[in-house]
Length: 224
Length: 246
Image 1 (cartoon, one colour):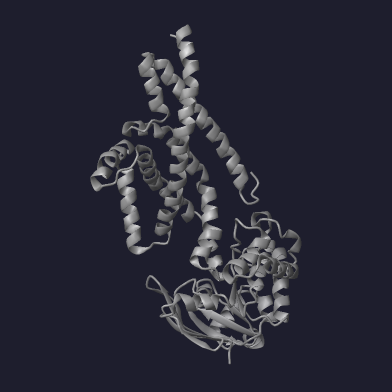
Image 2 (cartoon, each protein chain N blue to C red):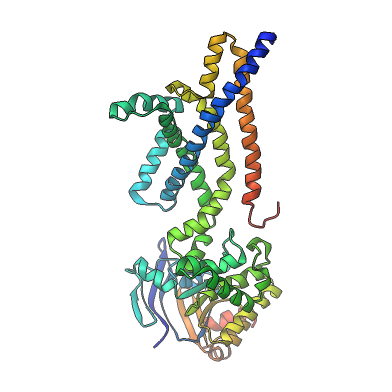
């Protein structure tokens, strides 16, 4: 399988695959992750604060998104948004779908992390005169974020790999680019193994970053 | 006029009446100790007058202003809280903040005082409670007694008109209890107005200007330490004091 031609193909394709990984896959995952985290904080806060109508809307959103496959959501956006007069490029569309999808999952992570902060922290905040939003910003969210961090990072690692689904809505990302090269050479397996290694490489770096991140965030003087 | 007066506070938790019409008057400089068996409503009373629980009925007069406790709005609550301090049984220091930040946060974020002035104020109150050298520690690095002294500093920093103490030493061993009571004694001697829910009979006797004995959601008896500890009028009070071995 790994004859001279294959090895040359792997070597020549590696920079091309990596290029699309760095230019498309990682930005797609990173942007969608940041946006989904912001979205998840809002959705989690609405539920934490138990705001009447908004809370129901958030539960409905989470129910729909968690109950349908990501691939189906991509397709619905790809064929559905133009019907609503929204014509957008596939990359942007993928960012929107990944943000909305991941937002639903991360919202549950954030909500659980916020609920894990002892009620006394909120009460103490009120008693020194802070209002609800000040307490959220200074006390509850930082503590919740520290708790949620490993789970959120888990989601990021999943998302890096899930971006390959964006190929189904014509986004030329790392996996699509690999398919193109494989199609030209008719030598599929080595190239798919190669792209698998690149994904693994990305995720290894992210795993390392998670470890470092946890150290930087610290745990407020609690010895580990 | 009294600094704080509460009238006819009622509070029920899912049908269970915990406060059955409490009246209390606190003058500036008073140290009011609230004693009573567990479940008598002492903590609930304190939580109701700082709105950590919503009273079902009652009135409050604070610094000459009248507040209907059932119809009170967020702005009134916020204004009253900015003039009061609260010390919890389990300290409730902000876990993600250092000792210094715990004390300054109420000044910088809630009162928009500059960081520089807030830190100056914080260091002076931390010095008062003997915690200045731990300013950069996190709460988890401190003993219970140290955490409670920081919590007292946090309450003091905002120059409150009154501080509420909810069983501040119940989670502490005798030695740590003594360090916290020393700080509270000093505050009392400086004229700080305080309401203290406590099981420390000795402290109540020595420091209080007024002692309130509560049982089953009502005030059974109130008076000077002399009246309550030496000549209690009610059988319920006598029974309680006998059981506490005082």
